[in-house]
Length: 455
Image (cartoon, rainbow, N blue to C red; front, side, top):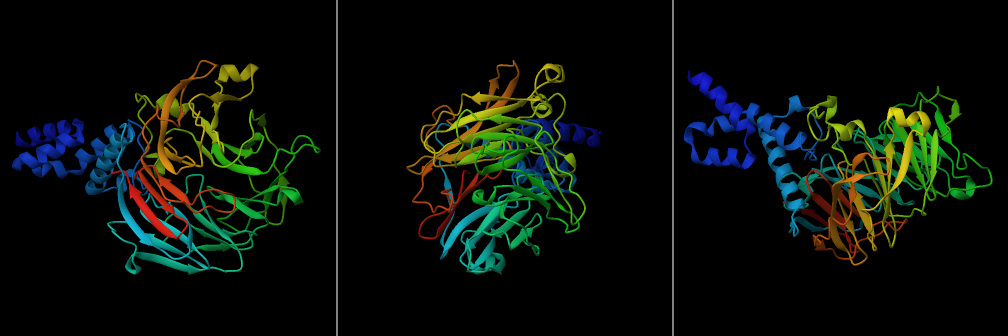
């Protein structure tokens, strides 16, 4: 009988709110041990995080490899960050504030648990777990770089979570698989590196020499490469330099200054050969795109092996089956577009994709924007005030209801005001954001690196 009662208690505890489970742990000696069971926190993780479409804190690993303690930590942090993120006033908690000489770019990796700082002639990887300061004992890896050129950090736009550090010419590229602690792969490519997308690395020649895009497979050297012409439609018309790219609905999206091009996912030829990739659809943008820019499908990302697939009864099930991509851009003013996929019946008489304007991106002053896969992000105005952005439902002219990016969060108060932040060659600020941890990292003009948490 006691076993049956315990089984019922486990099911009930798995359906309660995490705060109620913690309250029972503190008030009941008999149930204290039960509240630590993995079964309970796996149910909590599914109900409170997965089914509600919240970003998962920490490193993306399969669900079956998460321990009870790990599931509890992820669930509690995800709920706390979401609660703080939707409050009108959200105070920040600084966790690190350390002067690092000559740091000029920073990036969060490994689910916000690792910090990558770029310096003149070297880069350093720091462990941020249970750390109150950046000391030598927290260094995971340090690597020397050539001081004759400018280096830049490129984070994976896709699922693999790789990181590349490339020079301005593309002759030297160091690529880390997943966690930054392992040894990097050294590659050489033609043109400057644009970024990573799963197993692909995209490079581009300078606009004065054509502005073509080259796609390689960085995981292997046994493939050729693919070329995307700078002027795919009219030889005499230029759509400007490449701003960014992303993946959407098994398509490659390339955003130029005045055009959004949609390509099929490339299939690389054999080594020593090259092919030309042609767009399947393209849109002339209603406004010229400049930095800063952010792309987000506004849907929760999946853990490895598809463990984060939401139940069919979840309110996010429709969103995932009709996923969308958002382009947010602007220098003094933020104006956004929403790219939607037409249904099978609509696609018979109309193009496969449709581009609409986003009425929720009406910010007049934007100096920097960082948005995660779920649509949670931060943006800064010209006075370095930090604001939150999140998702909101929108009905498109076609009649579909989709989540889109709400940059203003309905007039919420700023999180904080940052000091002067260092800018790169493109004028973008040296700042990064992790949506799962609710963590911001930035580097000011004096080389002072700060890491700030929401909770």
